[in-house]
Length: 224
Image 1 (cartoon, rainbow, N blue to C red):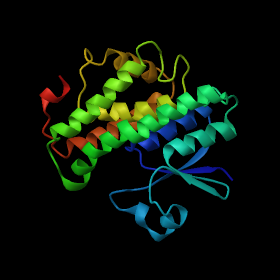
Image 2: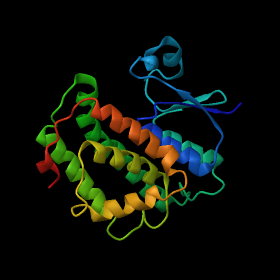
Image 3: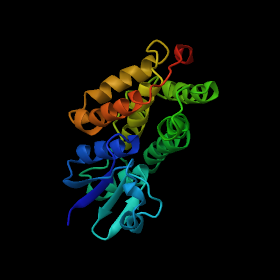
Image 4: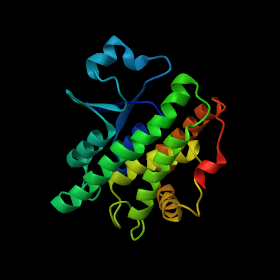
């Protein structure tokens, strides 16, 4: 029985898991879930994941959700080596810290902006929310000051989570390359990965199309 991935292509967390799957060269059955049609709230899906969140995977009789937990599990179980999620305790602790930084800071602040746009039709981003996201991105900029990737000079699953979030944030709140030069160099490195286009860019384009349909009023001053 192969792994099943329940996912929505525009979702940044789903794209983080797709990046991990592609990096591991895993064969996975993709099960698209239409969030607009509320397929994640059906009785059948709630039996799989009562939290009704995406992504969710099924591996034999095991179900797990939350992209960060999924990606750790996939590398631990299927990785040919531990490069993407090191077994060394200190290196793993750094990866875990960056994953929590994504979930608790960047992804949370991104969601605080995007959820009202997609769910409630908001067209203007409140300044306090854009400032909070930009402050989080400033922290990421400092992490990348002396390293190629977010935990050092080795690609890890933390890069996958953060690039999915940051590339999506850039679609909502276009960032200035002169303010975030390290982030833009890191984004270029991530975009050069052979599986980036399929695993992240296609979903990012779908997300940008959704965003465009909301006729968002952009505030240029937010990124200065």
